[in-house]
Image 1 (cartoon, helix red, strand yellow):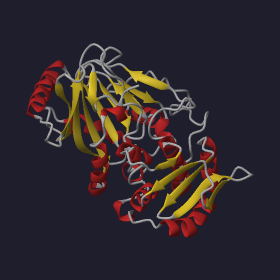
Image 2: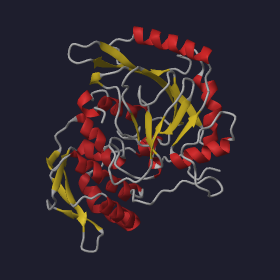
Image 3: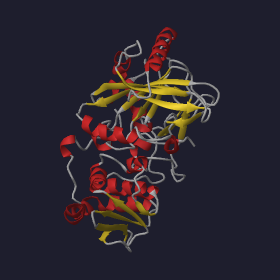
Image 4: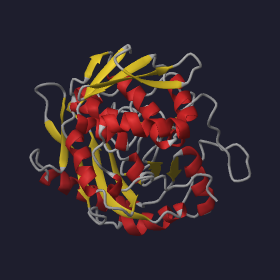
Length: 395
């Protein structure tokens, strides 16, 4: 049996409403402090925040620690950092619809004092207070198999392995590598379909991402085609991955395929993403864990880019963007051969390293649990699609 429930959802679209800042601070926060105050206080201490003022529609409240090290939320501007948020952004942050990372991507000038990293750090405290999610602390996470023995994080699997062992590994680490899932003939078909999809894409189609290679005078190329059906690549991803995702016992269903074609030397546009979670822009409480299968159409590794993951990061409440030096969780960079498949959970902190010498191709199939969040996803999409290369420059 898995040690982690793969269904981490605590909200549905029916829970979304406008949050009045005064009602929230005066009537809801006191109850939350009784219920989750200890968890939120630990989160505030772990955040390295001294204090931050959250100002909304003329209402100012300072989040800080009192003399006993407990979270205190007091009226007025008494903090070092300050964020001036619209009522819409505040509602979305409290309700976990859009995140502080979405504020960053939107480039809205909300920080009157300090910088956006302070708001991102504050959100871990907000999630601890509202949802009771413990913040990350060093030594909090270990990795064990079903017998309690330490896991080998370098282990890989095949589709013939015991689903219970795979579920245990994935639930503990947030990632997994499956070897030899697709054969050479299937990969030939998939590559042909990718070539056709890329040739048919245009910068105006709202279904693809584009990047420029080689500087200002370089070629403008399609680097990603989004939201494809399960048979778009000539091989049924539902048939191939459905039996594997069943190991979660959470009724995950196929949602879409995203095809990524990663050229060398992208200098403009979104291609290779730094450390992030797939719920970094929001909707964790409504959708996680999603299960994402990454089919390696080409090999991946240091020379042509690869998936990197922070093992166990799905199990803790940490900053949704970037990787702090204070995080002691293992970083694992996964090398694959054509036909191998990586699996990661939407809450796993991960990155994509840029190709150095040759193009990388990967097709990600996302499986989600039942629930209508389409209207909320459109709000996230609006933020994501406006992002520029300067936001997602690989490090």
